Length: 370
Image 1 (cartoon, rainbow, N blue to C red):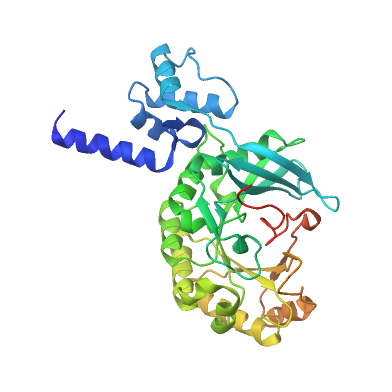
Image 2 (image 1 turned 180 degrees about the horizontal axis):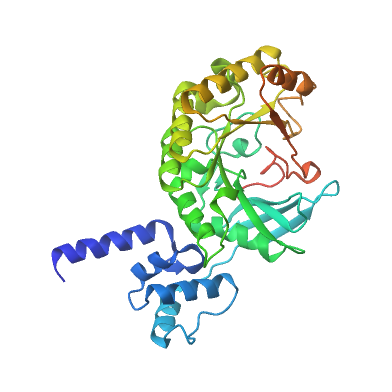
């Protein structure tokens, strides 16, 4: 083999090792057809599509009228389908939300099944990390610190766990709003999205996938360029920079203006309206002045990009006995200021609070390492 060929082969192997190997074996549920062909040269692209479809339909990797025996055997030798251990499945008693406590390689994390208005459709709220390093003060996951990133297969497998346990219907969409900061694990998240949207894999419409971030500009730009049909959500908390720094330590490193500039790049590149989420904290970010600052930011953003952000108002959910905040009683007043500025807002229903499945609560009831 020539030096150039060895270099190219090494690059492919290195890339595959970076996000698809489980131990030293390919995780077959977390690979696209093109990647499978690159990893297993005995397989054609048409065969790769058929083989990946087998994996995601729960069938054994086997020869068929469309797959040669040599191709199926090569894939079986190169890969497997690792599974997450489902430690607990907890259904809310107040709404149809279900939380799953999962374990992989000694680490635990959570996933939530979210019902939609159409009873045959559900959204999977997935985690991207075990714990989180950003330490947002209104989030239980932030109290855990970062244990490790999840691999692409561990992210994809969360959707498969939810899908396998549906009472009916299908997984219509995915939100990266579980444990962790998705854009701090952007390689694995992008890899997982590629599999989720692959027609022969999970076949989920990219426009029904939302990646929510505390505000990492580099990751936001990569998302725009590498997954342009995927939606972006920004945890705004406050449009007043000093207030945002108070509740989101990451804002000390990434100034709000820089974050908004990256979100504007995403909007101009994708033509998709970003979601700006504000979790209202009593006496912290719920005053009329906070609402007006948010309105001003939205108008400035729309004027510069031609895209108006969608405003999502989130009620605060308790994150522990030593809870640092109280739920705001000024939601109606806050939204009235936005309405006066001719800006619609949406009140996000955050369900499953009785089982720690609501926004901000994941990781509250279980340690990341048992």
